[in-house]
Amino acid sequence: GAVVSQHPSWVICKSGTSVKIECRSLDFQATTMFWYRQFPKQSLMLMATSNEGSKATYEQGVEKDKFLINHASLTLSTLTVTSAHPEDSSFYICSARTSGRLYNEQFFGPGTRLTVL
Amino acid sequence: KQEVTQIPAALSVPEGENLVLNCSFTDSAIYNLQWFRQDPGKGLTSLLLIQSSQREQTSGRLNASLDKSSGRSTLYIAASQPGDSATYLCAAGPYQAGTALIFGKGTTLSVSS
Image (cartoon, rainbow over all chains, first blue to last red; front, top):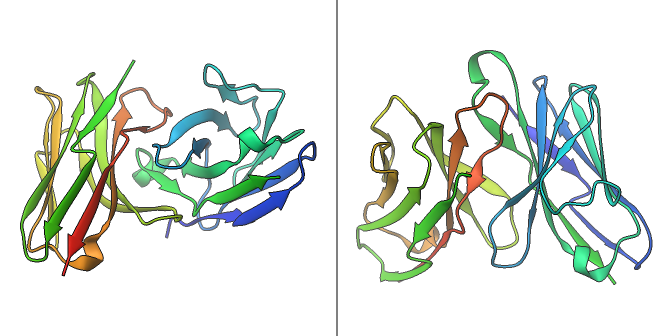
């Protein structure tokens, strides 16, 4: 139980295009989802927190107009990187929290590797 | 603001050695502390989760301890194997409900045969 999937697992795009990454909780309802970014040989940095049905809360330094987050249902959150540039190339990982017995644990997706040419 | 530090940044040991990875956090008001493993280019694998009320957790050859008062956690790996080679990340769970784990930079472990 408590499985989180991400799609796609990797994507290559041209500079200036937009890329959408999906994060799904497969067997539980995710009241909160988190998006992290990881540059090579660095740790995971939290980008934003999203609660179902409300606007995402972005961490300082993360452009909300560039990284659009939608958490339209309790099982799906999407991250859209708009007008991507090479410096946006990174590993994007989502995680989800639920309520109930496992409410204080985060479950992580497998990550999406984005390469912007 | 919570900060998580991991020492050492990298560690190389021969197969069979017992080893300890260290994690420290600045704010002792945590809900839990979690250790993950990350293989190159891959996602996270959860190893051990220690609740704030617990002192340690064990899984196979792994043992993680938590000392909230000193802001420290250790991950002990017994009888290391080449397959243990990976980056180990420590993450602190803030006490506020619904907030995200804060990660350290990790310790990259290399176990030689």
